[in-house]
Image 1: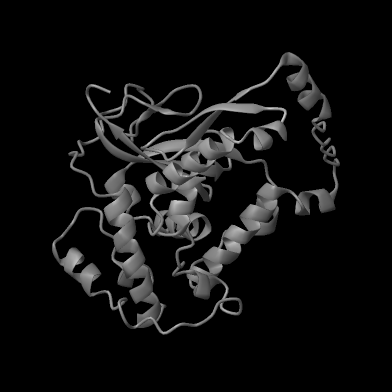
Image 2: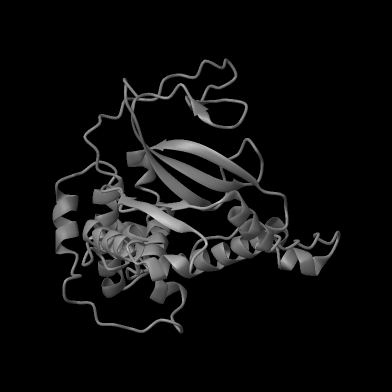
Length: 294
C-alpha cells in the first residue's frame, strides 16, 4: 500500500518514509493495552521492507480465536454456469467484450486501416493465450505496445493518457498542451538514431500536431523506461527444427520461447486465434533481460 500510494502521488510521497510512519503508528498501538484488547489478534512485531515499502505485522492468536475467525468468514460466491448456445452470454463474455473494445479503439486510432472481415463473428471464436519473447527494439516499433503502456500508467499511476481524447473525444476534456509537450526532446532523441525508436509522425500521420506532440512526449518516457538497455542484441539463432525455415525461436510444448539469445526482450502476451499463432490483441508486456549467468 505504501508503494502504491507513492506511485499514485508520482513520487511526492516517499514509500520508505510512508512505511516508517505506518510502523511507528502500529508500534504505538501495540503499546496501548486498551487498543489491543479490542482485537482478538494481538500484534507482537512490525517491520517494513525498505526496497518494496511493504509493512509486515506479526499477530499472536490462540487456536480457538483463529477457528472463530475462520468460521465467520463468508463462503466464496458461486459463479453462475455459462449458458450454452446463448447469444446474450456471448455478449457478456469478458473476452468478447475486450475484443470488441479493442477493435473500436483501433478503428479510432487508425481510421484508414482495414478491419478484418466478419469481425463480430471473429470475436466469438475460441481464443488462446500465447506468449512470445520479442527483441526489445522490435517491440518498441509496435505502436500498440506503447498504447498499452499508456493505459497502464493512466490506470495505475494516474498519468495522462495521450490517446484518450482520440479514442473517447466526447468523454475527455480538451486541454491545450502546447507547453512542455512540443516534442523537441523527442526530436533530439530521434536525431541521435537510437535503435528501435518509433517515428510517431509516420505511425500517426492522420493526427494533428498537438495530438502527436502528446504521444511523442509519452513515447519518449516509454522508450527510456522499458526499451533502452546496455545489453547488446544478438541475431536470433537458427531454429533446430528442420521444418522451421523462417529463423524464429523454438517453442516448447507450452508455447514458450526456448533457445533464444542473450539480450533484452519484451515478453508479449496476446489473445490469439490458435495455440500456434500470435495474431491477437496485446494483453500484457513484461521486460526480460537474459544474461549468461542468470
